[in-house]
Length: 76
Image (cartoon, rainbow, N blue to C red; front, side):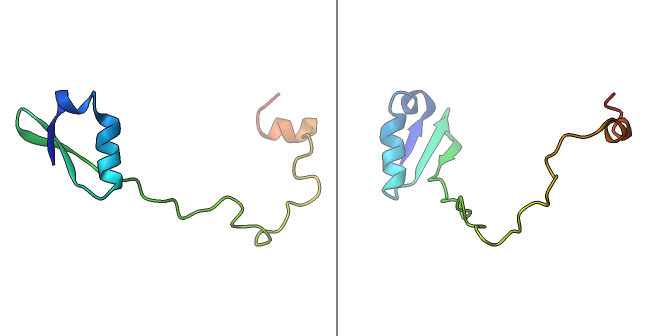
């Protein structure tokens, strides 16, 4: 399906639904293809997917730095 850009703006929700159903949508400008509307890919990374796979940080990893350490970072 080809849709001119000026016609695509008010019916974007319907075009997204069409893409979700597997239709190919090409948005044109002055009759020439300008953009393909494609479905988003599902993310491969799931939140919590590393659970139990990464060791916890060492004690003191998030402790405040003392003056000497801050000086090493030019933070004083």
